[in-house]
Image (cartoon, rainbow, N blue to C red; front, side, top):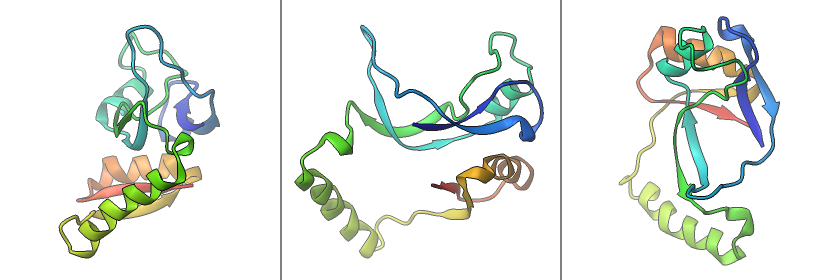
Length: 129
C-alpha cells in the first residue's frame, strides 16, 4: 500500500510517498479499509518533532473514513456494482455534493499539505494516484 510518511523531523519537504506493508489486525483490533484520509494540524505538529512520543517513520493522516473489515478487492464483483448503484443516484440527484477545493497528484503530497495549512481552503484536498 502507498502512504505519506516522514523519516526525519522537518517542514513539508520531509514528507515522502512510500510503499509500506499492508497492515493486519491483531487480537482485539479491527482493520479499517480507508476510503479517504486527511493530514491535519496534529500530523504537522508531529512531523515538526513537537510531540516527543511520535518518532520519525510515522505515516501521516491520523483521521480517515472507511469501512471496518471491508476490502472491495476481496468482494464478489456484484458488491462493487451494488455500492455504485447506491451512491450514484445520490450524486445524480444532488443529495450528495462533495466539495473539492483542489486536486494534487500523490507525488505532490507535501505541496497539498502546505496548501491545506497555509491557504485553509473550504472543501477537501484530493490526492490522485
